[in-house]
Image (cartoon, rainbow, N blue to C red; front, side, top):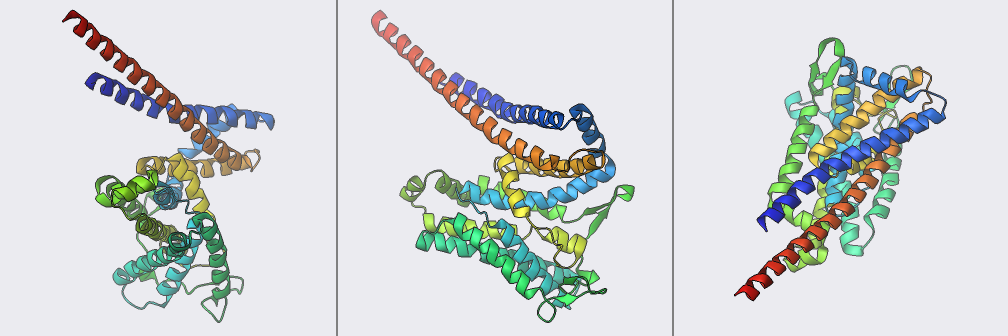
Length: 375
């Protein structure tokens, strides 16, 4: 049996590598065909993307984008591990960033105290907004998908109502932009100056800490074990004494708290205020990145880097005469290829394991019968 287990583990590792390789190859082929259909040379496009994407200034840009995308991916992945679809990450992070910006603009305390308060405010806002969907699910059976979609719209309406002069917004110089009161310079998060390549957002350190915490809590604690158990089988978890409703509500709250961090790199490192140009839609990007990363912290990081790379390089392709819609096509193709490839490999691996186990058991039964006949 030990030999059988060793063989299965090796084959599982090979299949785990085969899935992303198959997905990448398929995505490249389909993308090449799409570019070819537009009358352009896919080889030249890929060459330009590689050259431009690995330039030093592009690497800083990609890391800054990946920081935000990684936090979005982790926020979504927490729900996925519980078999929950927190599609409300988008509304949670925008409302959290808005409330944090309002608090940051009103604070008069030193920066070493103001920055933690701003971050805590963002996490608390995101957690409370997500908790609404969690409570509705465990008390009334309302689907978290429906609840979070509606909460996204409500969050947008709340921000639109409050972000007006005379309320929580103010008209900036020139009279063309309404924003919250800008954060004082002492409340700006530190940046990492990389020289000619540009400035790297210091919030990347926080994203790394979040990733480590995600890995440790889900993989090395009882809470993480219970969470994964509920996600795989609610009946089995309930039979083992786990409160399913409590875990559902808690997971939504934690997912919302992480979602609250998504807007912090923009607020604390870049814009230092919330206005109508604040990035939107990152929560939906997080869904794609969590799928790409298979809810694994390292996989999510690679997915976030890939997304930042594609955004940087395809925007440059537009200046080279390629259609601007190519970014959406490539992103969609990659997600589809990854999902299909993993499912194909999973089914193949399951079939192979069943065949090997059956063959091994048959061999053992034959050997046992032979010994009985001999004795």
